[in-house]
Amino acid sequence: MTKSGQLWGGRFSEKPHETFAEFNDSFKFDRRLFAADVRASIAHANGLAAAGVLTASEVAEITAGLSALLDAASADAGYFDGSDAEDVHSFIEGKLIAAIGDAGRKVHTGRSRNDQVATAFRLWLREETDTISAFIRDLQSAIVELAGRYKDAVLPGYTHLQRAQPVMFAHWCLAYFEMLRRDRERLADTRKRINVMPLGSGALAGTGFAIERDAVAAELGFDGISANSLDAVSDRDFAVEFTSACSLIMVHLSRLAEDLILYCSTEFGFVTLSDAVSSGSSLMPQKKNPDALELLRGKAGRVFGHNISLLAMLKGLPLAYNKDMQEDKQAVFDTVDTVQISLRAATIVLENATVNEEKTLAAANNGYLNATELADYLVKKGVPFRTAHETVGRIVLFAIEQGKELDELTIEALREFLPEIDEDVFTALSIESTLAAKNTVGGTSPERVANALTAAKEYLKK
Image 1 (cartoon, rainbow, N blue to C red):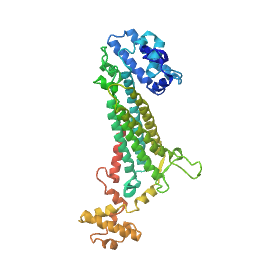
Image 2 (cartoon, rainbow, N blue to C red; image 1 turned 60 degrees about the horizontal axis):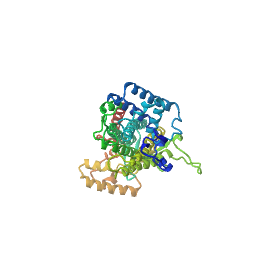
Image 3 (cartoon, rainbow, N blue to C red; image 1 turned 135 degrees about the vertical axis):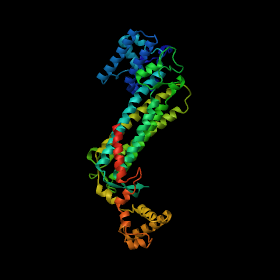
Image 4 (cartoon, helix red, strand yellow; image 1 turned 90 degrees about the vertical axis):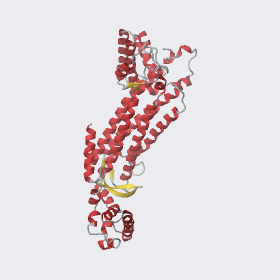
């Protein structure tokens, strides 16, 4: 080790300028890779031993020393404070050498910081990806619980933010369940490409030592090893994929938040949030604001930005490693932090939400949401759909002029438009019939929604 915790100072005769050192160093943020790098270093030492580069006693000494570092970091919250290390990797090596001497100087044999960093980063991100997936599952559970609590509630469905057709409230809930299901699938697919080990690629050309990379990968739980050393040390596709998958998670959380912000407003009055997830106004005593939801909506933008920043960082880089890639850490780290707290917050919000079933039902019964049912009724009477559509449009216009809903019109008034209309039209126009008619797979009939809710519960047991 050279002065200032550098791993590369032998060729240099001057110290780095203090501003350059501050600009160059990453220890203040990459220290969160500490445990992952220690694990990778132990596996690398075992690989060196299997290749005959290290003795069994040296590996035992290195392993004990690295394990002691893990224990020390766990026991001391200020373990990293005051270090002048350039990055977490030089910090670990410096601590190891100080603890065990020359054996610690051998641990970097056959390894570059390029493949070392990429390996630790992938190990760390693999675990965080699993944590995010678990948080998504928790949110899905909260959605299912909310849907079950209000399984008989009816809600007006919207297109263009205009009332369109009635749906079961549980159907609305399960729409977000499906979005989150896709999010988990995307994360699982992304994890496959995260879980490829670059260690053994060296700086760019591979290693000159006969390390069994497959054995090292198996020890670290990787699914496989990289096929090309140039690609391995310069690949950050997995980081882009991860932040892209997280961007879609945040899109879905933001849409959920937007729906609930509207539903919590006085104008809608469909949903009430408990005080635990709301805040007040510093000026207006009557206010109760859905701040948690607004933060969910707002934080989406920063995750989108990280995804774009990674793409912009990578787009012009020549092979192989370039220092630009140091910018990947903070983008991914903040993405992980933001998505995890957002998922946890969304879960708590749903656990603290109350639905006003009377208001949602009244809204679903008002505004001609059964107009499509009237058109379908006419089609079943043999009227061509386009004729039915046009006729119902004229009936709606008439009802608006009369200040009545469709089911409040008399049979005589309806027959003025089409004589095919019979008394059974009022059954067809009821909210119960309107919902029950949507009985195809994926529809909002009570039967289909109950089946979907059961399927969602089964999914969560896996």
